[in-house]
Image (cartoon, rainbow, N blue to C red; front, side, top):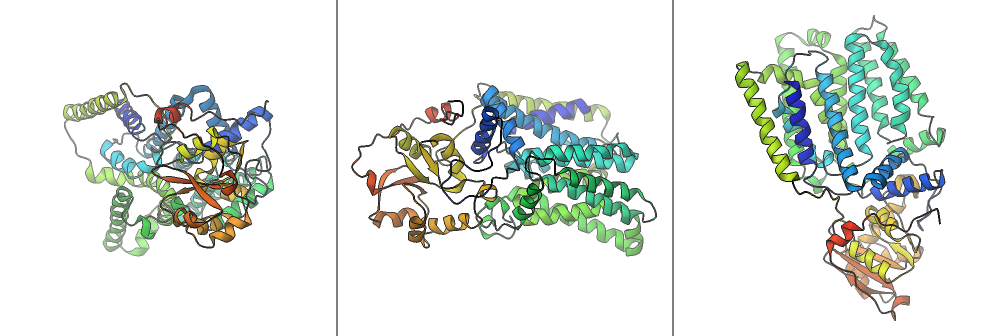
Length: 508
């Protein structure tokens, strides 16, 4: 019946992967890096489309850029969508294989996976991002480490230095892989201090850490990663806590409904076992590795919403057996098979009904991107520096360079001076915005309507409102005042059909 479970899971991912096909804000920067590499054979050490203050470009996602560009350039929207579906499925497949390491006969209850996956659907299904690779490698590391621990397959330790090289060149989340190895080393030491097995984990950690140096930037890459963890990301919502940030108080309810009961039941089981025996006996018998990892992923999940997936994946691995022992019911074999087949059929019908006549188009929404304002700049051939919010920066650069330079984009920790994003944030809130507008040479301003800056500019004689839509306003420097303007089409199909068109080309 495993085949039916896996097929049901794949259909579930296929279905939910089509419900909200957006393009990540930073995906455009990845395409630019990928295209530049394949056309020039090199990674640019300096940013070429920004006019904000920049520094040497350390790109911890350059490997992802190559994959994304190849997907988009050769297979378009369908390639991006299918790759996202496949990597999510493989991630969960590895999690299931890890669960089965302890008991190959343990039955997979789809309901538990349904609620677990739903709790992180906003991250898992929303869009293809570089961190998708970190989810996959995190699951792969859990599988390999568990397999080594249970089956004593020490030869698998040699996988980690090689995998770390790949992961470290795909996404900065590789530090979580190193953390997993370190936690297994600590856990196995605490489990049996007389055994020397923990040393194997420690050696694997040290060799893997050293293998991080195999990247285009050498030791500078390590320094960059360390500095990145020190950055103040107060303006980046995914780095905020879903539990302590007031703006997210009533958001991400599905994850909170999964997080609190999971933690509650886990703590209750600990207290129950301590009460049953004693703390000394409880501590002696528990798997220290399991508790260390669950504590770690709980802390990072409390700290930042971008870490929620790692919490859920870890809970599936370490707590599914506990769930199974509580909720497993010995149904008659026929009834059990019928139940699974019915679930498969229902999901199959839902997936086919939804996907039938579906165009598999990754969308650029006018609520998410200033597509009309960017088109206004293009059709009027407005040359000059464009100030737009950092999360829209890479899309604007992809569409407007080389006619226009952008202030900054989402690569804030890779390319720009640390304080630049804070200056931008204050300007949007109309705090010292006059100083900001004088400090940098801006020609075109694209501002979301809900920011105070959009209103403040109405009374500024140096700027005039040239265009607006439902979500954005576009202000031009007074030097463009006498120009007659064309206005962009509102046909959304046009923007989705031409979204990957760009003038960036190093072959001309």
